[in-house]
Length: 256
Image (cartoon, rainbow, N blue to C red; front, side, top):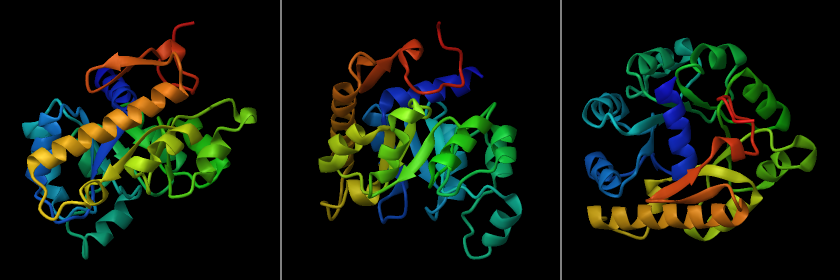
């Protein structure tokens, strides 16, 4: 439970999460840049062709990194079948045995899957409707993933009649310029793939990567401080927050 709460806290405090999607950049170079930039949490997706080798390596070589695995398939039978054309795929059972810190998905998770893993893994499933978001939070999900580029779902989940029931994790269309509007619309955390982060560089170096990551994190956190006065205070690369100040539902104990 301590590691689970630490990962939850890390996501909240870092805010912006670099995402390893499909690109032509060297995975170790990107990882080293994240570490040197002070990043504590990353998302490594199963779309990346080296995922089945890099994920175990990250857990072994970088135990202090909070590792979220994205593009997860919440059905081991289907995931196993898809390995024929996607050999890098890993099932939730395989990932769980590696003690990764969290599951992220473009697919909504059933309540049985959420309840199975939520006591030891951060669960960030996708929701397309308010009802899906509420059902998944009720089952134990920690954040709800909302995909862009539209902000409509973010704004719907922030309607006053819903009392800020869930923290929203936004991906898709998050460029540096759009971050203030995304946060203002309701995102509390989120991420962008290196394919977008490094799109201006033909041959990005570790120095380029570090600079871009720090810029995104700072921009995201400046926007969060403006949108959530009183919740955050400065803390190194990220922000510090108090559980008892959260507006959103939190599965951990919150001070009265």
